[in-house]
Image (cartoon, rainbow, N blue to C red; front, side, top):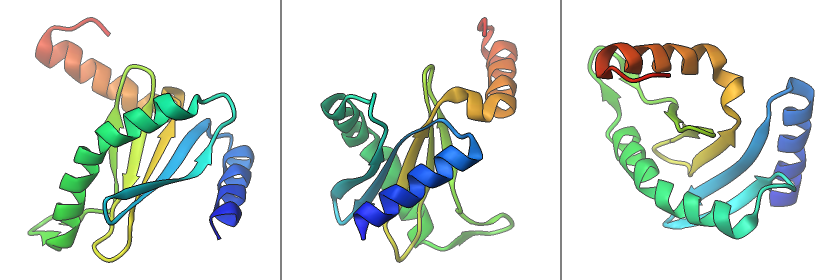
Length: 125
């Protein structure tokens, strides 16, 4: 099943033009690659994924608790780093999935966040 998911993710990445780097499944404290682009170094990516587990755990707790009054259920999140955009899909009953993509996929979003940081924190983008 995982090989098939990896092939489907590769096809999706190719057809959509998304610069997909990795896709991981986090379940019961374990993580499993569903997809890793060939040029992504395995051990370095795995170390980063382990560190990101804390973010995913917090999102899982929020997903497990149901909805936030007035805004609803957590359906996904984005974490913006200098070199990569991390997208997560948490769910109360299923595993959390984390995708890493190049920052250019979210150029409108990342430009907006850079503008906000520049304004609010007096940072140069």
